[in-house]
View 1 (tube, rainbow, N blue to C red):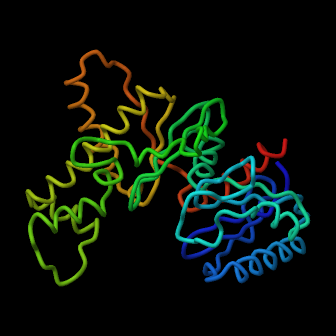
View 2 (cartoon, rainbow, N blue to C red):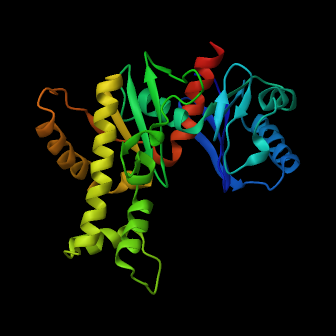
Length: 293
């Protein structure tokens, strides 16, 4: 691979690193600026610094939003409104003086897992990012499937049942919200996901029900992905991927689905992501190589 500068744009911080000999170096982060002018200045300064540290031949960028690879515009919406709906890629090429690639952050994470992580060896996979909502990516023949409207892999929008979408039913924050609404409890400190799991382990039936609802939604979504796109693997990322109970909980919910749908015999191969906080940067390097070669 080339020696590259890498940038991972996030809502609260922006990560920078140099990709050299298949390794991330000079890895650090700065707070996300409040304005577009400050943002451009920070990125330009950081890339100039990278050039003094390594012979970078391009810059790969992971970004929130619907990245249009044809126009170089970040469409859609994100927590950073000023990066959207102008030719940002062209402006960054002019500022950096080297080729620049842009890709959606979930897509970058999926490319990283395919290249050397939990999806290594596969040519197709689905990647779910389970956080506040559920995002994701689809890869076929080692390439991101962006879709006709740049919504390929946006699994969180899919309807699970009459009560909501996968994002509304398949995440810990929403399980907490449902638990508090159902019990009316006023807690002295915020209820975290860890505390919700602890309550469930202590036989709190309301906590058990909401976690089971979450697992059932994730299992339903994964089952539908398997039978809609038939990927070789389904990789799970996001904060909850650190919880060892995640896959067993989903597998138990899948067992119930397979008992109901007897004709279904293909079981999804689930795996937890490997690269966690480095995935977006590593995937930006993969995307750069795919975009420029």
